[in-house]
Amino acid sequence: MGMNFQLYRASVHLSRGLRQVHKAADKANDGNYDSAAKHLDKALNQFADAVSNFMNAEDDAAAKVVSEIDKGKEQLQKAKDAYVAGNYDSSDSHLEKAGEYFDEALDLLD
Image (cartoon, rainbow, N blue to C red):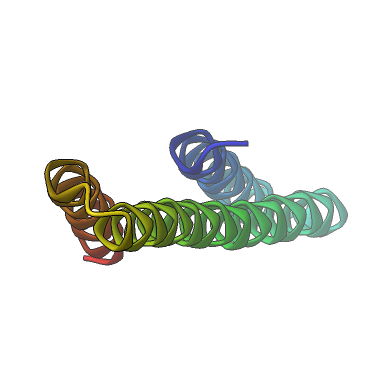
């Protein structure tokens, strides 16, 4: 799944977890401690899911960076091959594309 989707899901789980904490506080204020404990368990589960989504988002972002670097490497190889073959215009074009991929990878890391 994409990074933005994972971040969205994480925010949903955080919101749900906070809502459960508020419910637990209300139940505790009413003296219903068993119900409060159940809501706290639900909150903990929601927060665990949020952490998982954040970790998945990081994995997705890392995969995207690696993909851009790989594309840049392919373009560098094509540039070298074109240069060796004496096709300097093609080599320049591939070098430019490689730079674009590497720039994108750097942008993703920021």
